[in-house]
Picture 1 (cartoon, rainbow, N blue to C red):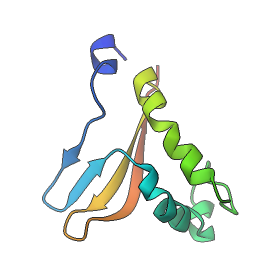
Picture 2: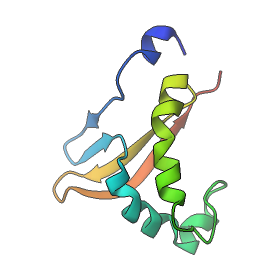
Picture 3: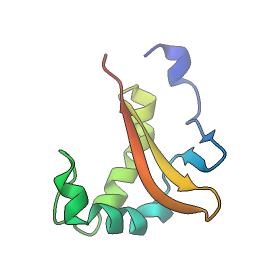
Amino acid sequence: MNSAIKEQQFPILETERLILRPFTLADAKDVQQMAGSQKIAETTVVIPHPYLDGVAEDWISKHQDWFRSGDSVDFAIELKSFKKLIGNISLMINK
């Protein structure tokens, strides 16, 4: 990733229905609830099950460093009409 991109602030993207934004620690409870589902964990490679207390906070706290280093961008997906977290998308940078 070039240095100009690394210097940018974390992007916020909006569509008619959704907001893609950075996670905050206030999202941790919702992340734990969603990621703690065995059905969700079974469809991913990286989500542990059981999803223990503190894992969401730890994961969220790493996002800015990953973004700044150019390794990945992790967006919270929020339903605009309800201001509710409904998921996430992680874009991994292949260097």
